Image 1 (cartoon, rainbow, N blue to C red):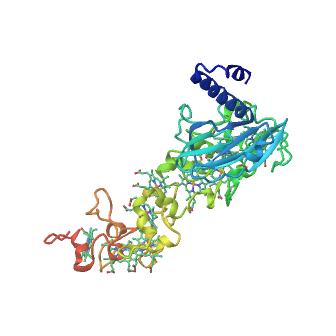
Image 2 (tube, helix red, strand yellow; image 1 turned 45 degrees about the horizontal axis):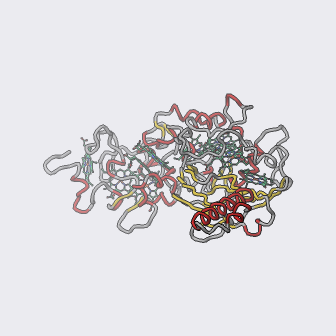
Image 3 (cartoon, rainbow, N blue to C red; image 1 turned 30 degrees about the vertical axis):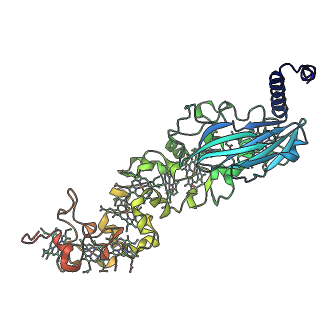
Length: 395
Ligand code: HEC
Ligand code: HEC
Ligand code: HEC
Ligand code: HEC
Ligand code: HEC
Ligand code: HEC
Ligand code: HEC
Ligand code: HEC
Ligand code: HEC
Ligand code: HEC
């Protein structure tokens, strides 16, 4: 300021004076806001790969006045309300949850016009995330709580914390003070998470005492099987469902909790399956041109398929004819006599499917199609018969 005033009378070269004025102005401006409104997390820009569709913004204010003007907005002008403000050693820490949509998210923080740019890439499972990729933003790069946060988030949790520290000095309750949102709006919770035993999964096994957090990746199945020992047998079964076989358990189950039974993100008997098996979506939505297997609106896909593993191909609970006749009991045990007298139901090779034996699905699609009775061809005009019994050829 002093420098500015003394140089003002010099009118020989205005432009120099103006430049000096501007540079001092912006310098002061930055200085002021940098001191009083500091964004502690997240960084100004970063890629965030996660299941959670929000990210926390923590702002540190040293001037109580700024609290009245503090405003966080989305690009569409929506104001985001803070979820809490807490004070320590003369500074105020204002906490926000930033809602994220897939792709770019921009937030403006005022006064000071600072921006936070979060590129959000939603993932169903973090199993294949390369944590060493420098573009991946991780909060816990090194420590559990950075120095900036530890005055409050430590074993002596703040008074208004929603959980009392665990007696045996486990750090998990500290985790929960920052991650309580994990169990909000969640109807089915995973026992070790509700019991705030985060360290069961998030500390590296080899160095439990070390202050590092891991995302259990790469071998989630050994993590899950550590406690779910009865399920270990799945691995040795002859027919294992794709993602269960690769140990990607969290692509379906949320290790913390979720909206649906068994901590699934969609109802496990139907909606979950067709989210990946797109071609079976027709089974769920009424389409008058299609004949759909009635059972799907009952116990769904899991009436016939196990989501993990079984002894039979396609992870069916039973061999096909036994499976079908367990419900269609009229045909149970029959070797011949459907759809016409003496017609075999099992035994010979399937003329339409190489390497397969004749069974119910030789003639019926188990899911549905455009033909009545879900037959593999039209019944009218015996088109379905002709598929196997060509004219002039009895077989
Ligand atoms: C049963 C094991 C298990 C327990 C217990 C557990 N987690 Fe996790 N957590 C995981 C796995 C596995 C992932 C990786 C994400 C995925 O694939 O679902 C994860 C991911 C996370 C994430 C990142 C989520 C995201 O969307 O990116 C946070 C945060 C987290 N855990 C916090 C916690 C906290 C806090 C606790 C204790 C209250 C806890 N976890 C308990 C297994 C567990
Ligand atoms: C002045 C004390 C204080 C400081 C410093 C502080 N926090 Fe907090 N924070 C709290 C309190 C109190 C809660 C509420 C805890 C509870 O209810 O269990 C909280 C809650 C949170 C939550 C959970 C918010 C939610 O969604 O419910 C997160 C995340 C969080 N803090 C992150 C941080 C981070 C990151 C830092 C450091 C950059 C930090 N905090 C620094 C006091 C503080
Ligand atoms: C001081 C607050 C705080 C504490 C304590 C804390 N976390 Fe976090 N954690 C965060 C924030 C902030 C993020 C970034 C996501 C967000 O903004 O909500 C995060 C992210 C994560 C992630 C995703 C990967 C990453 O590094 O970004 C995992 C996993 C996780 N936390 C687990 C834990 C576990 C387990 C504990 C306890 C051992 C713990 N956290 C303690 C604040 C905290
Ligand atoms: C620290 C031990 C532990 C770990 C690790 C663990 N679980 Fe669990 N899980 C439990 C306990 C305890 C229960 C509740 C008891 C029960 O119902 O079997 C449970 C229940 C479940 C349930 C509900 C079962 C039911 O019948 O209602 C599912 C699903 C589940 N866990 C999946 C997983 C997955 C997937 C993983 C790996 C990401 C995992 N668990 C890792 C301890 C663990
Ligand atoms: C394709 C989605 C999917 C995957 C992948 C998956 N599950 Fe499941 N899981 C389900 C569904 C659906 C149910 C409900 C079972 C039912 O309705 O019969 C279930 C039930 C469970 C149960 C409770 C009932 C039981 O059979 O014991 C446990 C425990 C479990 N899963 C653990 C795991 C583990 C461990 C893995 C990884 C090896 C895994 N799941 C992978 C969908 C999945
Ligand atoms: C996260 C995605 C995902 C979900 C959810 C999922 N599946 Fe799968 N499913 C796969 C993958 C991947 C394969 C392996 C594909 C392959 O081998 O061609 C597979 C294979 C199968 C197969 C064997 C296909 C074959 O040709 O051998 C059946 C049957 C099946 N899934 C049924 C189900 C059922 C029933 C559910 C719901 C309980 C379900 N899937 C949920 C991804 C998924
Ligand atoms: C009535 C029992 C039954 C129901 C219900 C059922 N399936 Fe199947 N599914 C089968 C049989 C039997 C096969 C083997 C067909 C064959 O013999 O080739 C099969 C095969 C499959 C295959 C592998 C071959 C293909 O057609 O792609 C997938 C994937 C599959 N089912 C997914 C599903 C999904 C998803 C649902 C729920 C929307 C479902 N199934 C409901 C009995 C059933
Ligand atoms: C869990 C029980 C269950 C199993 C297993 C089952 N179904 Fe069904 N099926 C049903 C129900 C329920 C209906 C609807 C009945 C109705 O609409 O009257 C149905 C309907 C049918 C129909 C149409 C009947 C009509 O009159 O339109 C055919 C064909 C059929 N199933 C064949 C099969 C075949 C082939 C299998 C084995 C791949 C099989 N079903 C397995 C329960 C089952
Ligand atoms: C050679 C082809 C063929 C085979 C194999 C076959 N079906 Fe059928 N199925 C038909 C035809 C054709 C119809 C049409 C209705 C009719 O003419 O009876 C039919 C009708 C049905 C119906 C509905 C009418 C009724 O009788 O309730 C059911 C249910 C059924 N089949 C179940 C099965 C089961 C279960 C198996 C295996 C044990 C099986 N089908 C094997 C051709 C076959
Ligand atoms: C998916 C193939 C397939 C379809 C579709 C099919 N069949 Fe067959 N059919 C066979 C096989 C295989 C045999 C046994 C031939 C043998 O024993 O060598 C057979 C045998 C027969 C026989 C001789 C039965 C006996 O006395 O041994 C008759 C008649 C017959 N089919 C009529 C029909 C009629 C009518 C239809 C249509 C409603 C039909 N088939 C649909 C495969 C099929």
